[in-house]
Amino acid sequence: MDNTGSVADIHPGDVNPKDLPEEIDYSEQARIRREKLKALKEAGKNPFSIVKFNQTHHSGEIKEHFEDFENKEVSVAGRLMAFRDIGKAAFIDLQDRDGRIQLYINATNLGDEAYREIKTYDIGDIIGVTGSVAKTRRGEISVYAVSVTLLAKSLEPLPEKYHGLKDIEVRYRRRYLDLIMNPESFEIFRKRARIISAVREYLDKRDYIEVETPILSTIASGAAARPFITKSNTLNMQLYLRIATELYLKRCIVGGMERVYDLGKNFRNEGIDIRHNPEFTMIELYQAYADYNDMMELCENLISHIALNVTGSTKVRYQDTDLEFAAPWKRLTMVDAVKEYGGPDFSTIKTDGEARELAAAWDLTDLLKKKTADCTRGDVLNAAFEKFAEAKLIQPAFIIDYPTDISPLTKEKPGDPSMTERFEAFVYGREIANAYSELNDPIVQEERFRQQAKERELGDDEAYQPDDDFISSLEIGMPPTGGMGIGIDRIVMFMTNAYSIRDVLLFPTMKPAD
Image (tube, one colour):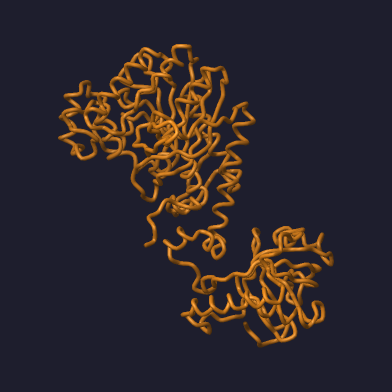
């Protein structure tokens, strides 16, 4: 703690980082803190025995509306983040959910014994403070304390202030430290909450009903992905963590709910990188009597609504690029996108055999998920799209009309059975949404599932698993329906300028530290 200067001279920014030690003996500090806690308990002042503090206000509202609070008493609570001792008085920086506010304490207001005890507090301790609001001579909005209560003792020192919490692995593993030390991380998760609220608000106002679908299921279907497998001991049966909510939501449409959505976690037993985490958040929504054109309109309007709500503009800066989310977004067929961005012209390719020859000629075989001899025209077209077009889709765009053989839950395009009414939305070269005019013909759907079963036999462990009960629901009758899934984590990345998906997940999946 600093013991130099006067009230007028001391200011939060006056300490020179170069004057501070670069290395701190954290083990010794932890020992001392435990000794302080022991002494407090022996004196009958155990902070952990306090069950409540009447926190009346937060730092943000006091600073934003100072005129309303000037000379009025408030009670604030939070973490002690800085202590500047000037003899018979001191300044404390208290950090709560809104940020920091300065506290002014002295022996006159608190009493000599209480003031001496406060001077033994450590950085990181959680305190409750009651006092009146005023400005210092420097114009700093402060709370002039008349009582200070230690509410919880911090037994482990926080990372050193001026060098901060820089280690990325530590930030992800010990997110609580990241939230304390890095205000920009705290703000990401505040915005994430606002994004999720904005999604719900938008859909609820349009008569969508939020429903909850099972996380455990006997079939992992509704998407092309590898599932996590678990077991029910009571039922003595294998279960899967859900990879998608699609087939359950369509059952709701069959049941007459007309507009439904599920916003929650999905789980896919796949790779981890800057865009993928095995546990992630998605929203899937379905609307009866709609098609994929309605879903495109909904998608661009929903995401532009999110941008405006969270950032104040439909133009968002991401990784040194300005992204414009205002509708309308660019629309390109998959065939046209491949051609436009330097790939082959698939409009001239009519058979699977021709497509396989093209795959070899255009060096696409490494991108195919199965043996070239087993690939269809749709497989090759999709590989060509990934190679030539995907990374070049920087501004928000819809890629429409996907091959039927890679879209087993989608309606065919009228007049062209080789293609479907499906789109994916891309931003900055990344897929953020997938949508269809949903297949509602139970006979065709059963045929598609049988074909997917053959794909699994050929080694594609991401092929769709057949769901007989879903077929039964279609046999009852499902109206024409548009459906869409949007990756919430990726939307949060764009709205917060986060480079990695781990930056927008409070607790990303990681190997144990040891």
